[in-house]
Every structure is written in C-alpha cells, then in structure tokens.
Image: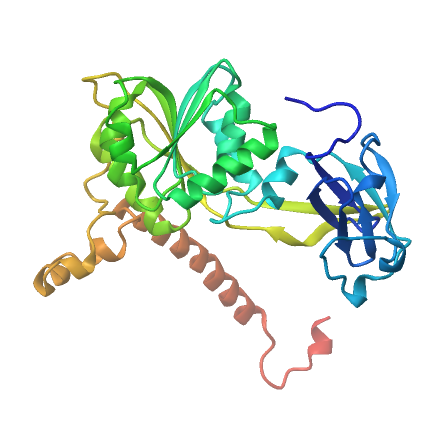
Length: 364
C-alpha cells in the first residue's frame, strides 16, 4: 500500500544530504538520530510532507535525548537533509538483516524472468532477511499468495518483522513456514503453485518436490552465487527431463556521474553477486526436448576420474573438448594462408633490396 500525506510516528523516513549520503530510520516522537553533522530531531519531521528539508541541531540544543550517549564528533549542527519515504529498494538495503540480502538488481530480474505478477501463487524457499520475500509479496498483491519456507527460526523471525514494518501489518496473502523445503512442501497439493523461487545452498537436491507442486508451464527461478552451484543446478535440471533447457543470467550494475560535460561511469560498480537460473515446467509425462550434441565433443568427462591409460587414449578430445576437428582444420587453413602472404611479402622485400655496397641514391 502506498502511503500518502504527512509523515507519521512509526513509519520509515530516509534522510539524504547534499552529498548523497543516506540515513533511514523509524520515526518516534521525541527521538533523535545521530549523524556525522549533528542530530536530526524526529519531531521536526513528524507532520511534514515528503520532500521537506530539515536541519541538524547540536547536542547542546537538542534537549532531552533519553539515555543516548551523544558522541563529541556529532555535536555540531546546521547540516541539511531532505526527508523522503524510502522506496522498496532503499528499504531492502537499509533494513535489519541476519543473512546477506539479495541485491535489488537481482531481485528485479527475478520478478521479470519469473513473470511474477498480480494474482500469482509463488512458493519461495530460503527467506533469509526478507528482501526477496518483500518484492514477491508486493508483486503478487492481495489477489495472489506467497508461501515462504525458511529452515532457520531466527531468519524467519527477522523476515517476518521486516515485512510487517514495510507494510505496516503482516499481509494476509503471505505465509511463512519454518521448515526444510522438502518437509514444508510435502503437505502442499500437486500443481498448486505457478512460480517457485529458490535461494538456498543446494537447490538441485530439492527438485523432486518442486516438480510435484509446480503447475505445468510454471517458472522456476534459482539464485546461486558460485560457478560450482551453477553447474550442478543446470545439469540437475537437464537430467530430470521435467524442465526446459535452463537459462542463465548474471546482472552487473554500474552508475554514472553526469555533471555538465563531465559524463563518465563511476569508478565503483556492483559486479558479481550471483547467477539466476530459470526454467519452465513440462506437462506431466512429457520429457523436455534436448539439444543434440556432436559425438566428438565431450564436455562432461573429468580427467581426474579416468584411468591414466584412458587419459592417454582420449587426451586430445579431453584437451580440446570445445573445439571440433573441423574447426581446427579451418583455423590451420586460415593461418597457412596468412603465413603465405607474410612470406611472399618477405620474398618481395629481399628481391627489391639493394646489393651490399651499392649507392642507394643512384636507384632513386
């Protein structure tokens, strides 16, 4: 629900100074927030509309501040901050967390790739601190439903608190189940969910229940952080035959500085955070189509798993597993042709060079 009107006690406010530094706090009557430039009095914000500018005060003029200890370095005042309601992206990055939250760039892509929209029934495993859950609950709205399965009780509690603080209450269309995924999904009806989102250590071990509870044509989106997890997940999806060929994305985010004619990328960027793997569920009893692979290519054999004799026999195929014989022959032909041009040019240079002791000026 979009909040409108003046700021009220209990809601979050984001303060931003002229340098772009942000501070997000919950408003409380009579309270203050310490900054590097003095104290922000909450009473100066409560009752004001978003977009107002408030000024810090020194500790000496702040009046009673409860039991808080004010650091000497934060006693100055007179610094201006713009007060706004935080967007979901701001809230996600500033909310209290136990586990590392998924970055907004990845969350946005999960919503897009997973086709998660109003009315969808979404099953999420691995709630963490609730950043992904928050976006899912917001996307499906009251017409849909989100069920989060979180194995650790402390993370479930953190997630539930963050969701309630953002919406002002616990959404009726969200359920959290403290359980392992297999145990939590065992009681769910077959084909009862349109979308499944995984953010866990070993998602490839949870496909059996996922295949049962997802509807035909449903979308599975998996967030993993390492290449090892990525490989195992993709091969598990292909091996089951119940999913379309997995698609893999990695999202990089780079901001820009734009000031007059000084237009350039910022030096810092958000690089690798994780991989997104997506696939669609096949109809019951229908096996997914597989891409045919040439017999000459072996991209699966691990050289450490074969005997020394087999290594010797198959060394060439193992070493050049991504290069076909046809490709190698073409590369050699191209290189022979280029060397031929180079050698021919060298022969012409030698033939046209003056003999030793000849006056080169006479040749001009």
